[in-house]
Image (cartoon, rainbow, N blue to C red):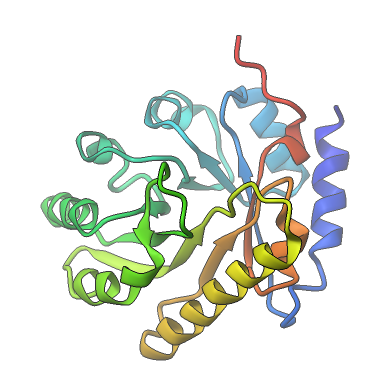
Length: 221
């Protein structure tokens, strides 16, 4: 697997922007990847890396330089303390309760933590704020001191109907634009992974999270 070649191909592919001509931000999803592999990706042009596990975020933190650190996985309240002040962007803020705890800890450290609101697009077994409750949750989270909402994150369900998936993307884009009109800090719609990023970019995503498309299949040994 040629990490450098994959990074260059992806950066070239997204260089023209999304369907609105907006810049696309590429986050390398680095779950199970070694610091050496991640370093190769960063030297090839990756500017943002995203971890799924807090333990991996901590273990690799001092071994990697030259890229923004994002957290893109499921986050428990008792693990937030390890991210505050070290994580450039937390993608997976899926409840008002989680946001409130981030706010509390960020204020203790006198920092402002950038976050994305994770929106659940109808999957009962997944986390996130239900789409129908997203604007209400935004209204409760936006005033919290120590946090800054930078946008939205979502994961598309596994579904064979491409038109249905596109409709979900369009719903997310509409919500994103609604919030962006209220808040100039809202800039990112993080939606799309290795298997569906092209579809998401075609419907207005401007941040994608790519793991296997850069590093190949994960090694869980």
